[in-house]
Image 1 (tube, rainbow, N blue to C red):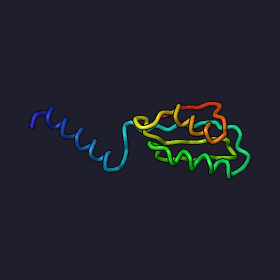
Image 2 (cartoon, helix red, strand yellow):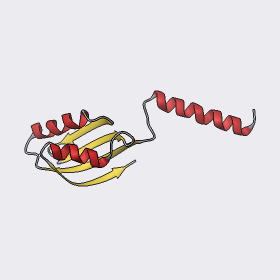
Image 3 (tube, one colour):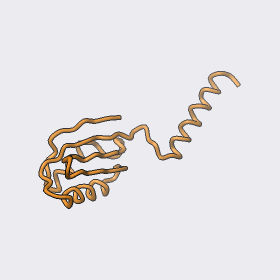
Image 4 (cartoon, rainbow, N blue to C red):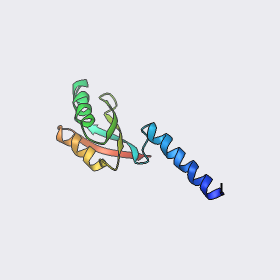
Length: 100
């Protein structure tokens, strides 16, 4: 095999391996500061709403830290849409720090 064919084959194998693990190149995480939570029930409410959002892969909401950590597929949902989900539950997003 030629070098280009071997490289293409290796790329293909890596893509297949990542796909089988459910890893997407579009997966991102964001940590959003949330104001207005008064108890653990508030955090649970936000968490349930976010988990029901298409494209959201994982969610952790902490009442104590006043924070929502969200892992999502940015080809299916945007950070702005995630902020709107939180806002629609009656809470305020005050800042964010996006990470890949």
